[in-house]
Image 1: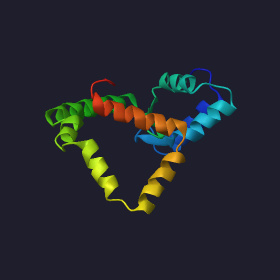
Image 2: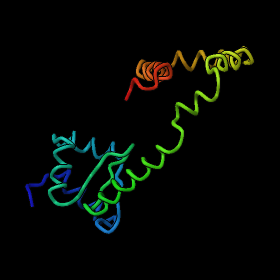
Image 3: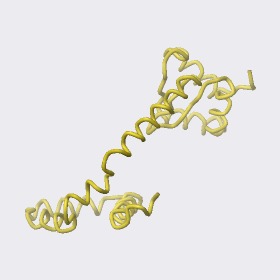
Length: 150
């Protein structure tokens, strides 16, 4: 076993208590990250240390998911199978373009809003963080060019 630290030991204890290696175990990302920060260690170092012990950790949304190597291989195969199936389906862009003129639809929807609803939309936009505004602009620019982010 490699040299361990408190974060690695805590994760190992938590996942074992929750059924690892027989089960896939998810831990919330934020507490694990905060623990790494508190103990002055990088999360990637912790995950690499666990990987050396055949504990494969990957970030998935708001969780870090821990799997055995066999379970990790199965997850990769399942993800590839899903990707192959979804490539047979029309893409999200095809579905959107089939809806017609989105900007015209948005304008029509806003024309039908009451002054109170328009004020609420204006307030929500005003209260958004700069990051949220940037994300919306990025998303809207991708509507103009669906291949830009790929």
